[in-house]
Image (tube, rainbow, N blue to C red; front, side, top):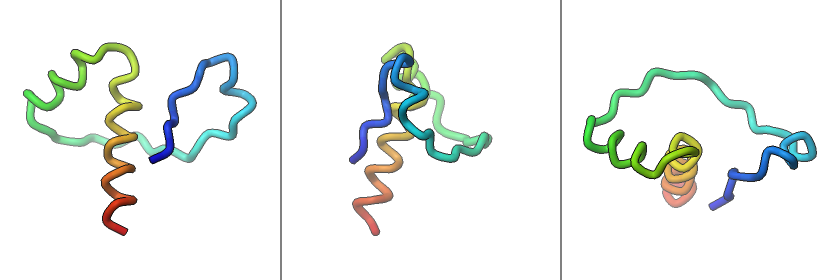
Amino acid sequence: MVDRTYPKSHASAIAPLSQAQVTLRIDSDVLKRFKLQGRGYQTHSDNLLRADMEAHL
């Protein structure tokens, strides 16, 4: 799994991956759990989805 969380000060030094804005329907309790983690919950969600994808290639 690649950790895509990095300090903003280094953001310009690392080429960002192409991302798409989407509407994703998930259970409200799942979203609440992610949001409880605070700032960066969307990046964390993306990392978990990527890890699952890579595990099933």
